[in-house]
Length: 158
Image (cartoon, rainbow, N blue to C red; front, side):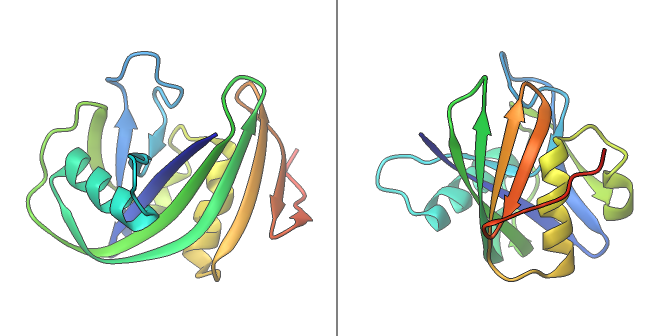
């Protein structure tokens, strides 16, 4: 089982996103996602997200919130618990990332970019200001089979 973090950094009506294009054998290849990664030994979710954002962007988060946990189940990949954060304030200067190209994207334009179907669900929850949530996303290949939010199955668009 994998424990990871993911953070969506906002600035007004924009998200700082990573276009995953550089990493070999990347399950997120060509997708647009936030910043984060796998836990190291003895790290809390907060320790991990602060380290990962600093490593991938050069930025130090100064105002961030732990928003939810997303359980990914897949027929191709190991089960993953992703600890989801948002951030609104940071210090430092952007640096290059060895996993892809970072860019500020208008939140209204994000839906047009390649992303996982399940990401659209938790991004909507983040935008709506939902309280801390648990979301389970089950995939066959790259196709979302079902989603369960706080123990209740969601209707997926056809």
